Structures are given as structure tokens and as C-alpha cells.
Image 1 (cartoon, rainbow, N blue to C red):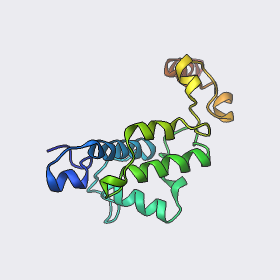
Image 2 (tube, one colour; image 1 turned 180 degrees about the horizontal axis):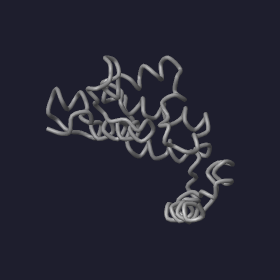
Image 3 (spheres, one colour; image 1 turned 120 degrees about the vertical axis):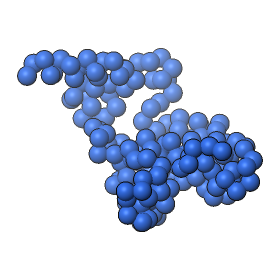
Image 4 (tube, rainbow, N blue to C red; image 1 turned 135 degrees about the vertical axis):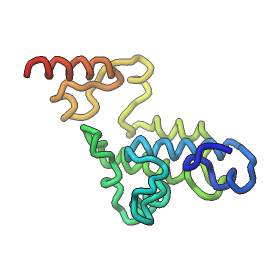
Length: 157
């Protein structure tokens, strides 16, 4: 049937898979990446047990900045965060017909104002994500370098 928390409501009720079902699951995955929370957590209070309900409530009450996982060193620019939160909301729309197609999601994520520009990803250049990231010697698309820098720092201590 699928993994609870990732299954779209339409698939849960009909048992029929379609592209909209995958888009819903992708939306849940994006929300998980942003928040660092699992799709279902029974240890949380009512209203926060399911990631979708909590996420929608936070966005609707204009508390999107509070959704970002505290483990993320450099918070995303406000405009980029707002854009990705709106993409998430569209992906998890209860009406499967209102969810975007995956190709549309790619275009939305690759928009110029989104921090990870296409040309950087295609050439695998290393450019600072944010001014604070540059000061910390952390770069985009090179996780090996960030790990190496962290290892160097720990050796200096």
C-alpha cells in the first residue's frame, strides 16, 4: 500500500497510483528535508503529529521561518524559503488535479531566484551558498570539501 505518512490521500482512498500520488510523496520528502521531522511522530502533541497538518498550520499562520530545521547551519534566504514552501503546499494539495507535474516542479525549483542555479549544478562549480557560508569555507555542491574542512578544524583543536 505504501509507507504511512508519504501516501497521498487519493491513493489511500482509491488504491490507484498516478503521477499526483508521486508528487504528493515528493512534497512530503521536501518538507522532511526542510524541517528535519518525520512524516508521522506520535510523541508530538495533537496538531503536530502529522507533518502535513503541522506544516500547513505553520505556513498559514505565516511562521514559515520557524519550519527550518535548526541543524541547517545557514538558513535559506527568505525569498527562496517562501518559494519552496509554496511548492511544498502545491505538492501536498488534497486535490490531486491541483498538484503540479514533476516537470513543473523542476522548473519552479530551477527559477533564477532559487539559490541553486542550473549552471552551477551542471558544471559542478563550487560557489558560496550564502555570505556566512563563504566565511565558514563551506561551498555548494561539494559535500566532500565541507567534510574535509570540518575534519581540519577538529584536528586543530
